[in-house]
Image (cartoon, rainbow, N blue to C red; front, side):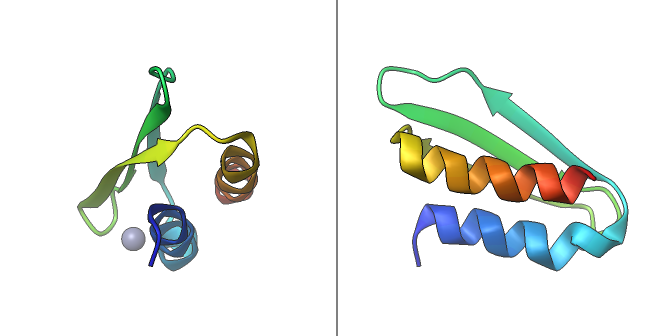
Length: 68
Ligand SMILES: [Zn+2]
């Protein structure tokens, strides 16, 4: 499973928990550092995502949905 799929899975699993915390580091040379946490479950996923535009678009879309 790719890092991107892990992120999407985490968002889906915890979307209904209430509060997701999302921390994005500005892109380094080739990657974003993304940390997503769920306060309800007291768990977090931290990973580095390749900054390829397509992959970022997919992640960002799901994150926006989670915040709505
Ligand atoms: Zn949760």
